[in-house]
Each structure stands twice: as C-alpha cells, then as structure tokens.
Amino acid sequence: MPDTRKLRSRIKSVNSTLHLTHAMELVASSKIRRATERMEASGQHAEAFTAAMGLLAGSSACARSPWLRHRKDGKTLLVVIAGDRGLAGGYNANVFRFMRDWPEAEVIPVGKRACERYAGERIQAEGFTAEAAEGITKRLCEAFRSGSYARIGVVYTRYVTILSQVPEVKWLLPLTPPEEKPQSDMIFEPGAEPILEAAIPAYVSGVLTACVRESFACEVCARRNAMDAAGKNAREMIDTLQLQYNRARQGAITQEITEIVAGGNV
Image (cartoon, rainbow, N blue to C red; front, side, top):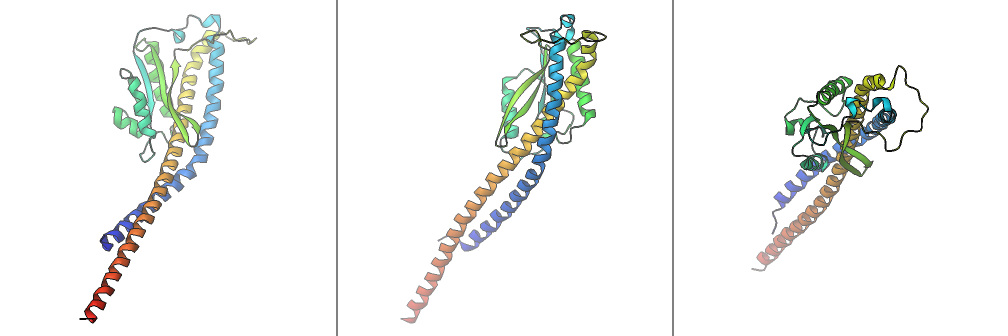
C-alpha cells in the first residue's frame, strides 16, 4: 500500500512547482506584447534598409565594390543569437542544433546561453543596445573588408506564430545584386558607391538588431509555451497523486476498521 506521507509530500512539491511555472508563464506573457512590438518596428527598419541596399547593389557604379565581392572559398563568420535564460522549451537547443550545419564557422555569440557555449563576451539578447550593435557591426565590417571572411551571416530564430519559431541564417555580406535590374529612376548623389560605403554600417547594424529582437520575441513565446505545458503536466500529476492518496487513505481507514471489528469479535 502506498505511503500516504510520501504521497502528501509529493503533492506539496508538485504544487509548489505548479505555482512557479504559472508565475513564469505570467511574466513571459507580460513581455510578449512589448517584445513583438519592438520586433515589428525593427523588422520594418531592416526591410527598408535591405530594399535600399538592393537598389545600390544593382547599380552599375557599385559593381566593383568590395561589399559585393563573392568568393567560392574562404571562412564563414556567424553571429549566433540564443537566449539569456533556460526553461524555454527547445528554443536554445534548436539554435545549437542548427549550428551543426556550420561546424567550421567562427562565431560571435549574442545571448548568455550562446556566450556560455561559444566562450564570448557576455552580450544579452534582452535589452540589446545600440552600443552593442555598433561594436559587433564594426568587427563584422572590418573582418569582411580585410578579406578575412568570404561571407558573414546571422543565425537567429524567425518568428512564425506565437506557437512556432524556426532557426535560420540570414546573410549580411557580401551583398547580392537583385536578379532583375531594379526599375527605379532614383539618382544617387554624390554617387551610388559613396552612399553604399556610408550606408553599410547602418545596414548591418539595423539587420543585426532586428534579428536579435526577433529572436528575443521567439524566446519569450517559447518560454510562455513551455511553462503552459509544464503547468498542464503538473496539474495532471497532482490529480493522479491525489487519486492515489485518496485510495491509500481509504485503504488505511478500511484496514483500521477491519482490525477494530476483528478485535471486538475475539
């Protein structure tokens, strides 16, 4: 017969865990709206920059720019964005699993979990600052321009829905001209190449910031989903343990009554 004391202790323990997961779910839920708003704002900014860079990259004046230099061989540099905390389901694990496809790539980590895994400077994903973006952008641009790397990209988590997030890579450099020549009468002054040179750091910084904010929104959603699932499992476990406890307690009472009756008949 199960020990009622152990069952009661187990129920108390699971109930404490339920309160913890519920509190974490509420915190994550409170952050979702703010995180998605910042993600959308940064995404619009990055899309505008990307469209402008497409016009510049498609210009004949920029055809020989070092920022459009494509090489078949050479090293790859990736900015890998993971979470600042755990308890977010498979969010961090999915990013690191995705990185198995790039075993030779050098990494600049963003997010505490990524920094722990790849031994980099601790840069948080939550509250990613303009100063942090500027520092990473400077390293990326200098590394590409010097020819140290053939391509540079960002491994981030793309937001699909509140229940679905997918890790992928977004390539920053080199720029790729559009397949079709842009239909635009835009005139660049003082010229397309000087503007491209001046715009590259802002473009890289803008896309990088957008990727970090999108990844953070995915982390918050993943944590909310994980805590919701954990809460449901905890409630199911409490119901099962409570049923076992009731049966054990009823069995103990029945046995005591039986012993009393049997003793009275002696």
